[in-house]
Length: 142
Image (cartoon, rainbow, N blue to C red; front, side):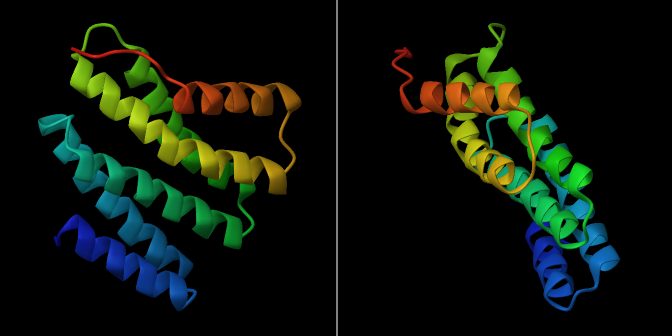
């Protein structure tokens, strides 16, 4: 088994060569490694960013292959996970702040997806509210 970065590179190479199932395999493997890293250290910004990137890569792959529902799911998984983390009261402020910052990485691709593919207005409104909140968050952490 390689590093998550190496697996992402292999996934990207397969994606460029239109070897969709191989690319999916490598992205999934990278995500699995990153999941393990996050269980050991949930504050690892590198692991969070890599994990989000892995899901975004899968989403792009599924959009290319016409699997739109799967593509959307791959955008929603990291977004909903970070939103859940940001709203938890049983974790420390640093972890909450990291999650809030991570939502800035997850919201834009979801909003772009909603512009390309039919998405209910209520969902788009909710995403826009979250976008505004993420960029106007005035909480103070100690």
